Image (cartoon, rainbow, N blue to C red; front, side):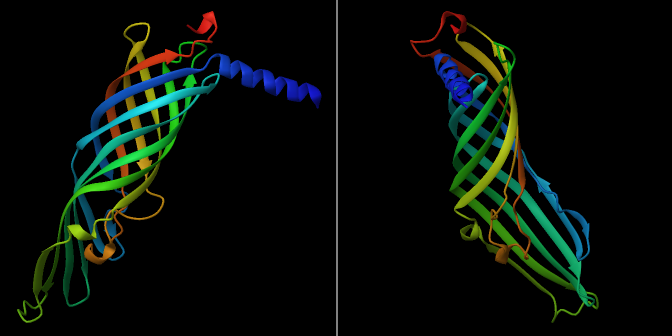
Length: 237
C-alpha cells in the first residue's frame, strides 16, 4: 500500500515538474447539423443550413504528462431554415422557421496530447454554456385545403425572435493538429463536433412543435503560444 502511495506521489510530482501553459486563438466556420429530417411518420421535415463564423480563445495548463486542463471563451452562430409539412386528411398543415442567432460561450476543457514529447496531435472534450447575444427568427404557419376552400385556409407570418432561448448547453469533442512555427509558437487546425443533450435553440411553440437542438460542426485555424513555469526541467524546455 505504501508503495502505491509513493508511486502516485511521484507521478503527481512529475506532472508538476513539466507544467506548461498554452494560450491560443482560433477562427473559422461552423454549421448546425440536424438528424431529424426527411420523410417522417407525420410528413416531411427539411432544413436548409448555412455556414457561419465561429471563434475561440483558450488557455490550457498541463496537469500531468500528456494531459491538459483549461477553458475557452468563444463565439458561435446559427443560421438555418426549417420547413415542416404534414397532412391532416383534409389539407396540408405547414410550418416554416427562418432562424439566425449568436451566442458567446465558455467551456471547461480536458485535453490529451498524443506523442512522446512533441504532442503535435491533441484530442479533447468540453462542456460549454452559451449566452445569447443576438437573435432573428421568423415563423410562418399556413394551411392549404385539399378542396381549395378559402374559408379553411390560413397563412400567418410573425416575428418569433423573443422565443429564442437565452442559454444553450452543449457537450462536444474535437481533434487538433499543431504545426511548429518557432520554439514557442505553433499553427493549429481544429475540428470539433458538439451536441445539445437538453434544451433547444427556440421554444417549440413557434416552430410547429419541432425541437431545434442541432449538432454543431466547426473547422477553425489559429495560432498557439506556449510558455512554461520557471521550475521546469531542461528536457521539457
